[in-house]
Length: 213
Image (tube, rainbow, N blue to C red; front, side, top):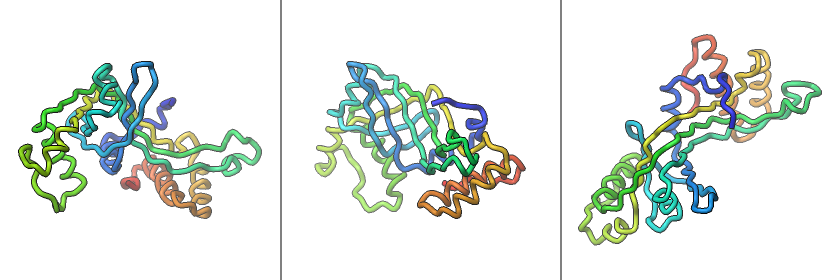
C-alpha cells in the first residue's frame, strides 16, 4: 500500500476515534517458512499498545514467539466507484474508498492465568460493559480451564500508518459529483462513503464535524 500525503493527513483525534469505533482488527504474523498468517480479533487499546488474546496453540502464538515483530490493522471498506463518475472515457479513474490504520508492533506474550484474566477483564469492559457475567477469578472452576488455554498478547506500537482514501486527490467539484452519485446509487455502504467524502470537503473549509464511525 502506498501512503500519499493527501490520504494520510488525518488529525490524530480522528484516527483514534476511528480505531475505537472498530470492533475487530487483523493481526498479521510471519510463519517459520516466511508464510504470512492473519487472524481477526477483538481488541483493546492503551497507551502505545494494542491488546488481544489468542489460544496458546494458535499458529500465530508460535509465530510471535519466533519473531515478535508483527502488524495490527483495522479498516472500513466504503466501496468502489465506476470510472465514468470521474472521467467520461478514462477507465483508470475507477477506484475504491476505504479507511485503514496499520500499527507496526512488537509483541510480548503472557500465559500466567492472572495476566490472562486481567486482560479478559479489559476486553469484557469494552465489549460487555453492562456486565451479565461472573467476576473472573483464576481459582474459579468456571474460568480455570479457559485461562489455562489462553495467552494475553500485548502489541507495543512501534509505528502507526494511516490511509483514509476518500478522493482527496480529486478537486472539490469532482468530489461533490461523486458524493451525489453515491447517494443516488444507494448501495449498503454508499451513504457512509458519501458522508466520509463530504467530511474531506468540510475539513478543507474548517467546518468538518466528525466523520461517521
